[in-house]
Image 1 (tube, rainbow, N blue to C red):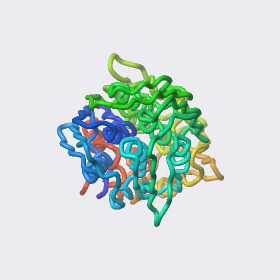
Image 2 (spheres, rainbow, N blue to C red):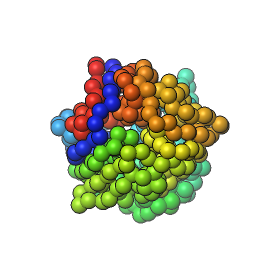
Image 3 (cartoon, rainbow, N blue to C red):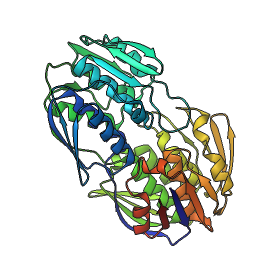
Length: 416
């Protein structure tokens, strides 16, 4: 599977932002906590959702797919074991640990797979759950967890990990007593999960802040919920108009979820404005360079970084991008941009980017989800044809990226 991209006119039109990948997968995992039928709406049609559907089905849940909707029925008895062949596809699958332990007292989950950009260990997940009374053994790459009764406790995260916070949240809602999660992640997706759990009957205070208090309850009920819009997909279309120029309206995008990104885009010359139900954006003929550092939310997300590097590669001036969260491994895609004529030098955790006037089309490979999307966008401003192979990475997290860009005037096709 590959994207074929050629330079085209400035982008024009309206695009609707899909439901958030980084929220819906956790919401799906949370359905393990309550018997009955849950309904999720605004669900993106992406490969990771399909994988999570298969994972839930393998544990005994019934999943019915509709157009951007899921109906998930959890029976009284489920199998608290996740098959390796599904978990290896997606790192986010580790979040079933918390709800499985809370619902059944057992969880067998292989070490997760996913994007190839270096190790992101699950120690913070296991350490947090251990503070609630769970115990773990690791046998042949499988995490075997037990918890006869989770007990409310103070759970301190070493770093404000998004998925670790989600995991603890889903465990703490069924723990006996009160749990205080300190140094919790503050992402909008954490607040979305908390809203879903609260509808189910959980008692949660402080979601979206660095301290979350959870009072455990004995029973939860199935509910209906609409997934929040995907801020990384919104950022992708903002980067697209920055690169290709033009004027776009992003329906359903949430500017309040992207304050720091909007500030950086403004420094680069991309104009944005909130609309009644989204974001309006326009870009100059050529952007200005700026410096960027990734930080936990509300800072610049590491998922935005490949998009910003692609933008800076054709901006006027020199920009320095610093990766503070996952290290130099998340610059692996830079060699692919260099193949397209970008002037980027890696110095430890820093990338020094000297903007060139135009890139050159070339065959490149998508090493992971967000880097793959950045390479597709780079093809919009590259002379000649750009072919981005390993497009399956991009399909994991984007609902019809090629179709949406094409509808805005881009010359792009996805060849399966």
